[in-house]
Image (cartoon, rainbow, N blue to C red; front, side, top):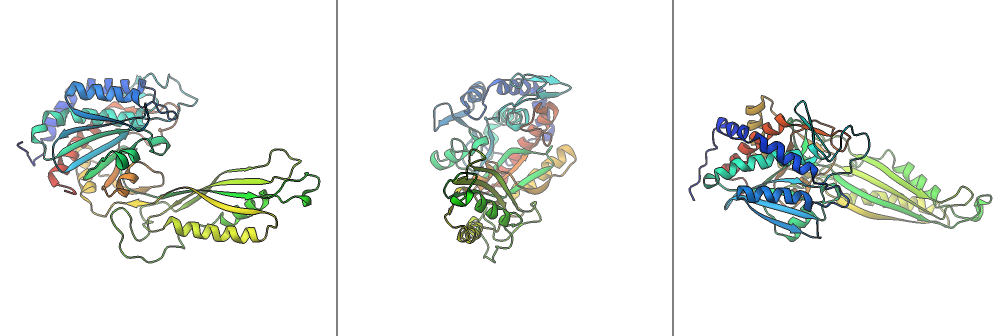
Length: 417
C-alpha cells in the first residue's frame, strides 16, 4: 500500500467536506432521533445509524456488546501503525424539563440544531463521521490507521463502554482524542482530577425521641465527622516522589487545575422526628490533583473517623470506598497537543490552550491504559445536560476539517509507534 506522509491540502479537505454537508446534517438528525438515554442506554439504536454509515461508505467496523443492547462500535480506516483513535459516546442523559422543542426530534434554527445530545456527544460524532468520509477516499495514502470509536455507557461510568473495550475486547491505539470537552475548540483537556467516592456508615441503636439518652444516635457522630473534614483539602498529604509513568504524574499540577474539592452529596438517617436514628450514611465526593494518591486521602479520613468514633459510645463507624479513579495527566510537550494547536489555529485563527478538568471522560481510562489521550471538541460551553441543548452546524463542519488534518498529522508523525 502506497502511503503519503504529507497531509492533503487544507483547501481540498474543505471543498470535500462542504460538498457533503448535507450528510452531516442528516447524520446528526438520525443520531438525535435514536433515543439512547442512560439509564437504560439502548445504545444499539444509535449504533444502527453508525453501522449503516459504515456500510454505505465501505468502512470496516465491529460491534461489541457486554450486555444486549449496550452497543459499542469500532470503525477502522487504513492499516498498520500508528493507530490514532477518536472516541465518542452514543448515550445521553435524560431530557429533563424546560425544552422548547421535542428533545428527541432535531430542530434547526439559525444554523443551530437543538436536541438532547446535540453537543454531548452526537454532534461531534456526526462531525467525525464527516471527517471519516474524507479519510476513506484517501485510505490508500494514509500513513497509519484511523479508529473511529463510538462507545456506550459514558454517562454512567463506562462499565459497558470504554472500560469494557479496553479490558475485555483488546482495543488499543498509539494516541487518542476524545471530543467530549467542548469549549468551541479553544481548550485542550490534558488531564483530569482523581475522583474518590466513599460512604461513611454509623450504626448505633434506636430510642424514643422523648428520651434520646436511652439510644445511641448514629447521626451526630456523622455530623461531627463531616464538620471536621469540611475545610480539609487533599494537598497537604503530597510527598516527594520520583518521576511517575505516563499518565500518573509525580507532583501536583495546580497550575492546570482548579483546587481540589470535597462535597457531601447525601446524608441519610432516621425516618420520623420522634425516633433516635440507629443508622446514618453519608456520601462524599473528593476530587484531587495529579500527584496525590487516593490511599493518602483515605488514610486521613479513616484517622478522623476513628477519632470521632472513640468519642461516641455505643456507635460503630466505618468507611466504604465506592470508587477511586486516579488523576491523569498527559506528558508535557506531547505531539497531540502541538498538532491540535497548530491545525486549529490555521483553521480558526485561535490557538487552543491546555487545562485540566475536574470531571471525567473516557480519556482517563485511555491514559490509565498507557494510551496518550486528550479531550478536544467543539460546541458552546455549558449547554450539555441542559434543556435546549444545541450545536452549530458551521462549527461542526469546522471541527471536522481540523480533525481530519490532525488525525493525518498524528499518523505521519508516528506518535507512540
